[in-house]
Image (cartoon, rainbow over all chains, first blue to last red; front, top):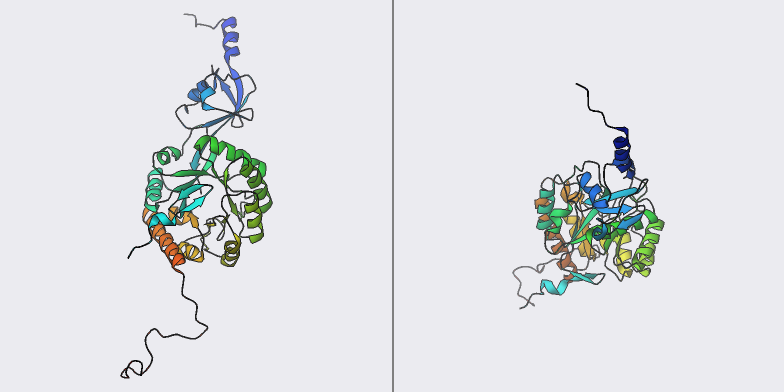
Length: 84
Length: 268
């Protein structure tokens, strides 16, 4: 039986959907994260209280779902922890 | 006879009224449950929190969630980790976004060895943040000259250190604190260095408006009991300050009982 092989055209199509980002200083390939909300969910921090900084600009929680991510975007995520 | 009610002894910082004179840090606690227990036992109304980048797999307890469920607690994000004014300003803005609180503890200590606050960067950050409408609470060296400068640029309070952060060396700066207190027109809060409730009481007796503790509670044998002990000490120190301590004797003893021969007639 022949193994199923992904046609090249499909491969490149999927490749184009991936977005190369920098998240908290590290390289991150977001699978299909078109929005900030989708990225947070993909990272497993959707329900947490975080502040999102996209290219040095704070993204208000209300516009996360409409805020799209592009190749090369720099995302920083912060939250509150215990401190004195 | 009427006792002076608690309500009459509120203090105001940045237009906000508080009755508790104990501020609490939330770092170094074993778990969120102990932290919340200590916060409740302390009766505090202002707690500090820190800002951190989210790790790929967040492991720490979520400190904000449990705190936000408590009633009557004002969050005060700090700027720890900032090495200069611009980093502190950025941290302050992010902290406000997360906490929804206008309070900020400006904390800039570039040297991890002694953690002494940088007076120049602290002043610069405080000046800009005060102009942006923050309730600026600067962690600062116990320096009366800097204190006046910080007051002049619109800080809501002064938070001079008693001794190095987490050192437990108590009120090593007592003489400088007295000078700050004599001239300050905004609340003075001793921040950092306290180890025992008696030191907190001493700070309040001296005339400080409040104290901020973290390690003294979190690193104690029983954080919840220690938080309660600090609350009592702060209360006692404040009442003592308002009552006014007796004058010191001039090197001679003054008897509390009559010293005349005990069999002699009174007023003889």
